[in-house]
Image (cartoon, rainbow, N blue to C red; front, side, top):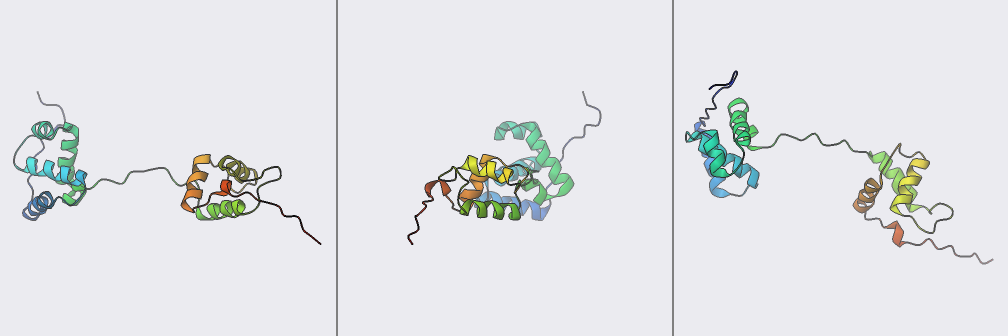
Length: 161
């Protein structure tokens, strides 16, 4: 029984695409995902059905079909590589990061001997350096700049006249 709008997937690699796929599979110096997609394309090019390829490579039929259709519609490069993933936008821009780092390099607020990640997050929002920020964002920021303000005690030396 055929479903409405269902088209059968037929993959026929072009000459230079077939060579590129075979070179990729022979060398094996790319990522495992790219090699896996190349295997899918080679098997589909040999005339195997998507379900058979999925069973042989122990993966889902949906994955096999999506790689095959991507080759048919968009070409070899698009079929072998992943589409960019949306990801979450950055919470802090460079200006915000600079302000927070400058704050951390100064003395901690009154009543605190040293900075903690939680204190930095609270102070950054209280001083309105950023609208909102979490402890993990602060931790990653400090780590990327190799800062450990909780290890430094701010010692006040008395001044002698």
